[in-house]
Length: 462
Picture 1 (cartoon, rainbow, N blue to C red):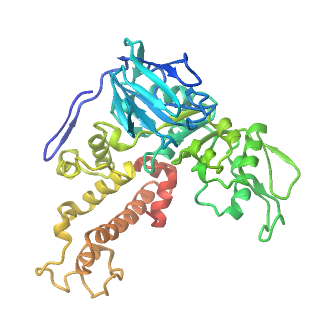
Picture 2 (picture 1 turned 180 degrees about the vertical axis):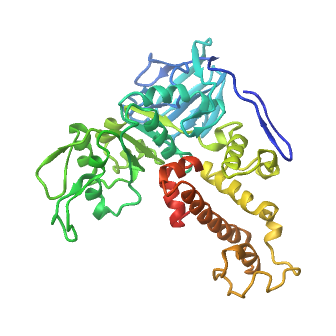
Picture 3 (picture 1 turned 135 degrees about the horizontal axis):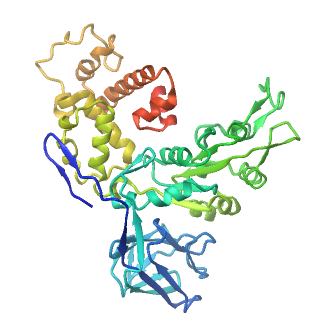
């Protein structure tokens, strides 16, 4: 990948070359001890996602050893190396006698999981991994090898009709990816409906999913279709599927298998032609092991799986995405503050792209005042500088006075930043909605964020 050069004022981002095949080394895992002795697994890069070794039916490399967890460890090609990541297994992952959480292997190591030992052997560059020259898939952007190798895979998945599980940490862009898949798919002319399992009370979840008839329960003054009916002919995206109430999981499975739903209070089945995309921040294999998620529902959904890498693993994408956000906010590319990210070179970005967006938006709104030292109370600031006096913690009487007010309230840096950022978000959302005549889809697309997140910002939630 071409280097990313950053100076104090600009960020020069070289475009990657046209679509090509990057040849990576292949690795073979030979089972030399345990119930599956003699079995061989090949990791060759043909599937550009993290592969899993375990006992689950959906594991890429399946073992029968009862001491191995359902999803014991992940295997991911890193150019000419193989990264092994323990998935919170019960008995641990051991490399050459040392228990590891994450290790990079070069070949000839012994990998032990449960009562099974595998010998790693390095092979030739058999696996040609297709790497896109593009820097985006729909509204998902990134020029890192970790993302570019996903784009051709996503294109193929988008044009199919199969269910997809999108996995990833909070803030990695799972909903944005789901929207992009819908927009590239053959169902793009149909609706895309989002159902967030964390946003609906358990008592209302069945009605929200499947709809209800008039009088079905107290307060049901009229019939109402559920999200399956609303998404007919399009895509239904179920966010945070791991939080779905366990009592509703068999009903969801039945709806998926029959492509029909039954409203609460009705005996009639209604046809629903929808494509299902789901997302989760949880390890569903672990949830199954703990009895919180049905394995049959998981197998029905896990026809295809995409794991969005966290920002800390996307080499070179932090500056690229920050520049993109800066331009979306209206910032001059030549004025991009390179020092903003230089100070966070070793930062892990636990909030991922969402946190990065907030950091750039904060700097765009405040400029040099975003420095911690400028948010401290100064003797040069007059008590009347921001207009009429307000009590500490009270909202300023004028929106234009918010920064001066925050400075005078003697909040901590983090409290002050949150207060100013909340004001910026409210004003930004109001402005972009006004610019597009209240059209949420257009406003979200222009802002580079998912539609539901635009609603979240509008409501003032974090």
